[in-house]
Image (cartoon, rainbow, N blue to C red):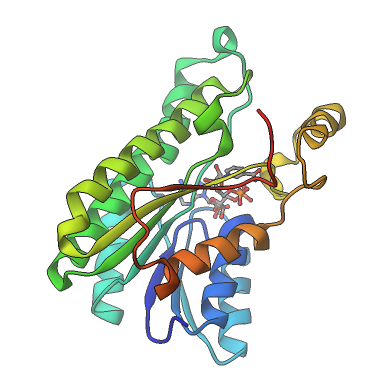
Length: 246
Ligand code: NAP
C-alpha cells in the first residue's frame, strides 16, 4: 500500500504515534520515528519494524525547537532524499481551568502543539513542493472542534491545527499536496492516564460506540489517508471518536 513512501511520524515513540509508525511500516513505508524524551520507546518501535523486514530510523528532535526540526529534516534529506508524508502527531495535554492556567503553561502547550506542527509542516512542504506531491496529516482533537471545560489552552491549540490545516490545504493543493486533520476522541494512551475515573466514566457515557478508542483505531484512519484511497481528500477534519458527544 505504501511501498517506498518515506513517512515522518512526529512523536512516534508512544501512543497514537507508535501505533501509526508500526502500521505504516507494516504496509511498506520507510518510517522516521521522531521522539523528544522517550529514546528507549523510540528504539523499541524501530527494532520492531526492522525485525519484520521493514525500514525505520529514529531521530531525536523537540518539535518546538526550530534548529532541531531543521536538523531532523536535513537528516531525512541526506538519508532518503525526499519526504512523501508527514504525520504531525507530537503533542502534549493541559488540564486546567482558564483562571488557573499560568502563562508558562500556555507557552509550553502552544510551543509544542502549535509551533511544532507549523515548523514541521513548513520544512516538509518545502521538500514536497519541489516534487509536486505529498501528504500532510495533522493530529487535532475532538476538543479542538467542540471545546472542553478544563482544557482551554489545549482545546485552543487543537483548534489552531484545524485552521492551519484548512488554509495550508488551499495553499498547497496546486502542488499536488493534500493536508488533512484527524480529530481523535478519547484514546487509551499515556495522555489520558492522569484523568480521574469518574471523568473517564462520564466521557464513556457519551460515546455511542460504548468504548474508548485504541491507538490502532486512529492509526487505521491515518493509513487510509496516507494510501491512494485518500488521494482526493484534502482540507478535511476526520473525527475518530466512536460518535462522542461533547
Ligand atoms: P502520548 O501517548 O502522550 O504520546 C505523545 C507523543 O508525543 C510521544 O511520542 C512524545 O514523545 C511526543 N512528544 C511530546 N512532545 C514532543 C516534542 N516537543 N517533540 C517531539 N515529540 C514530542 O499521547 P497520544 O495520546 O499518543 O497523543 C498523540 C497526539 O494525539 C497528540 O497530538 C494528542 O494531542 C492527540 N490526541 C490524543 C487523544 C487521546 O485521547 N489520547 C485525543 C485527541 C488527540 P517523547 O515521549 O519522546 O517526548
